[in-house]
Length: 300
Image (cartoon, rainbow, N blue to C red):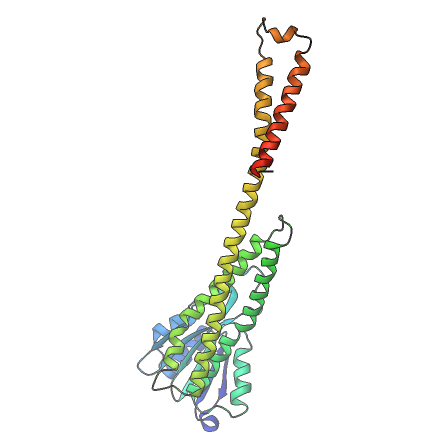
């Protein structure tokens, strides 16, 4: 569907929005505005990463916007985000997107309907700003999820099934962090020396804040996973220590039992009336001796 959200007569530029466009609609707009075939191809790829590219007669930008309708176990770029492609010059701006979202309507309401947008550069700045802001609330939720799993690692039951949930939190953070890193070129070009103004500097500050948030989340996730595996290893070592203690207790007892379990005909102790009590007392004494030895060493 093609919509004209702003016109040159009223706003000084055209804003054409294509929502889930057909091939015919894409070709029509491409011919009308002389869009390059390479940018059209990138525009139609649903999993394309963020990019900033200059052509002879326009600039091409790809944004990723956080999807609000993703599943709990979504962990890929296409599942977690929606793509918005932008073609812009001083005279027009074209947005192309497959999924319905609030980004276009929000920017239109804030900038076009209120008359607070005087150029396509300003409009592009607003689109990028709102797209980055879509990652802010998910970042806070992911931080709360990390706090939840951290509590489970340190304080809750050992059998709590946290590893699967922690994996998906890590995947979401890594995907968004990757998108933030790839979006740096867009921000850097918008806030270049020749284009820098209060809006572009504010956009760079927002980008740095969001990138720092996800960098910290990534580090915290890696540390929490490391701690989780360390604790799991410590618990395994504790189990092995207990089993080793039991085996040390039974090794000498098994040795004595093995000796008197041999089927030799002439064993003097077998005919001794006090042989059985003596062996039992010896086994008890050895066990008590091992117990106090372990106590002294601090192993019990």
